[in-house]
Length: 122
Image (spheres, one colour):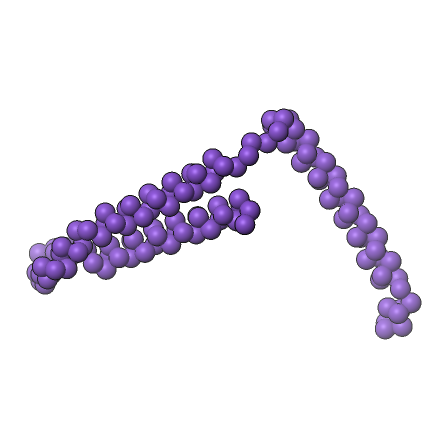
């Protein structure tokens, strides 16, 4: 797997961990009375409260670990040779190549449109 795919996979992992963390915290957080107009929320069971206290620590550790793995992958990306000027030159070369291929494709499409088989269909 190339570095970009690994980075994308790691970003997906971080997003998944964050999503699950927020959802779990919302689901398991102790109830809080929002206003005097509302009844007192039911108390949480003692075992739920103890497991809730540990969950944020475990989830935070998983999120930090995933972020560190992402940082390690980014640090492993090789630096481009020649600096910014070389990158810009390479981008220009690739753009010129892309334009040439696009023109060739357009010529082939036009030639295919003028094909005798296509004329019989019309």
